[in-house]
Amino acid sequence: MTIDNFNFAGKKAIVRVDFNVPLDENGKITDDTRIRGALPTLKKILSDGGSLIIMSHMGKPKGKVNPKFSLAQIKDDVAKALGCDVKFAPDCANADEAAANLKPGEVLLLENLRFYPEEEGKPVGIDKEDPAYDAAKKEMKERQKAFAKKLASYADVYVNDAFGTAHRKHASTAVIADYFDKQDKMLGYLMEKEVQAVNNILSDIKRPFTAIMGGSKVSTKIGIIENLMDKVDNLILCGGMTYTFAKAQGGHVGDSICENDKLDLALDIIKKAKEKNVNLVLGTDCVAADSFSNDAKTQVVPANAIPDGWEGLDAGPETRKAFADVIKNAKTILWNGPAGVFEFDNFTAGSRAIADAIVEATDKGAFSLVGGGDSVACVNKFGLADRVSYVSTGGGALLEAIEGKVLPGVAAIND
View 1 (cartoon, rainbow, N blue to C red):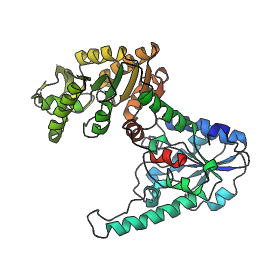
View 2 (view 1 turned 60 degrees about the vertical axis):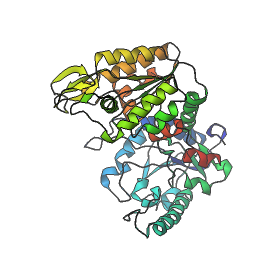
View 3 (view 1 turned 180 degrees about the vertical axis):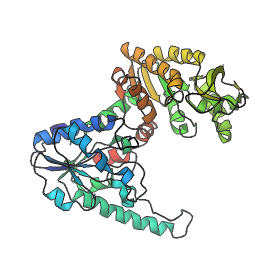
């Protein structure tokens, strides 16, 4: 069943969204991309004459109630975005009455799902090495099923529109689907678009295909880097992982972030790229700083000759030009991870050069997919989100999908 051909009139729909939005110290939303992304699905249900139960997680409260992660903080923002009043259920597992009393066109927002350990389904307070762990895990799986069944009891229809958590087999993203018939569970518009965007990258590749992988650690990206080796023509590796590669090849990286236990892995990636005829593009120079601060003193130095007491915080001018030249000629582009500490205004030039080159290539007809929290924050900061083909709301989910893994949140709907 697709959301487009389903009529929600007179139905109660429980929708899993990803409203894990960033908040400032006063509990105010600093980036509402994820809320805006879910609006087409939510508005379709309401315009059909259905009633809406919205559920999401926020942060990592680790199965305990924590006001810092309460969705009550965003209730008014959701109401404003939807253009209607939103009721709030302060306990997601005890919202029977509030759900039962919902009338067509009304909206109920449930409190943070992760205030319950059953949402993630992991045993709490017991180590994996403990002999009792397996029994605790089995018991938690049963509790997770009961929690999912409770959430399902609130509604007639289940819609998953939370791509950002589709790679997790949580109660609200996968297990809940077991309690709905095939015709009463479906992907939302955002999920459909995300799945299609991944398909465009993986199965409808226009060449040259260039992937840009940034971020601080090569270890967190190794799966996707290895998978992309069989697909891309050009692979740009940037951000903090630059210095692991520089050191692996005998360079000096000063105080830069560096995974000393991954030097062999970096050399292996270089070797594999050569074997697979992939053009691996690494930074040759960087903007080094004498402290991790926006106001630090800076100098441009070779990425493999950074003085002691200095650390690389952004791509240098030579590197920016090399990256841009490769990106501008691409027909398919994937960007995940910035080229520097873009949160500091004085270290945005590398990420900005990548973003500008992606926009230029997109204007010439390339398909560009930007995904992962930091990359999305980059294009939003630069005001370029509407100048790329697609901005993904999913970080881990996007990477796992591109790695070729089956996403539990999608499989649960299709099974």
